[in-house]
Length: 224
Image (cartoon, rainbow, N blue to C red; front, side, top):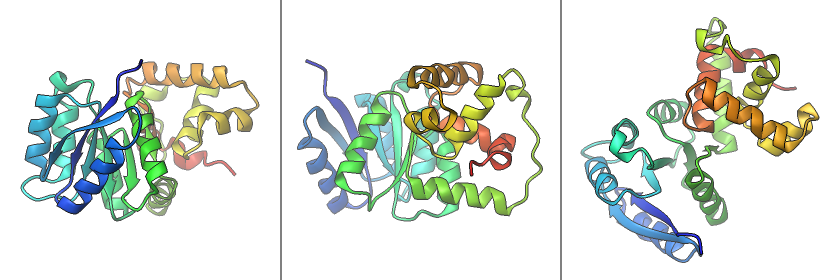
């Protein structure tokens, strides 16, 4: 029997923490291992409990969720701990810093219970997840700023197909959707994704999204 996904819940609102805990504990194969009311507590408990996933509210007192995420993701002793950032607002200023800090995913607090559970499972397997509305806002934000699109040196070693896959990942497509768009098999897509993670030294899919935007690649190749 597979071990349960261990979840740490960090939110400054006790009612929300309780609701998330009930959802996690009532989901087969998951358990809530702790609760934190601010970023400092979240970092301390993450270091102590080593959860698989931290549900991280980005607006908390003492230390915000972005700072706490950065501390967790930069600490080698918590290498197996992944962060799923949560916020009430799908506003651009929260998305980018959270992902830059190392969050493996970003979802809105008004996501359905089923979507949140699915997000936790995806993060726990080492993948990344972005809410579709967040991905669209991120794309729109970069497009508005008319940034100079220059491939970062780290993209030079990618093949043409890997570039195509990276663009589609940055635009929020799943492996299955990429398979259909490029007319290649799902195992082939997974091979390309694995190659991208290795070549770009990215920990997960969410970090690939950041790299694509920072290089300008996503802006130049948004799918029709």
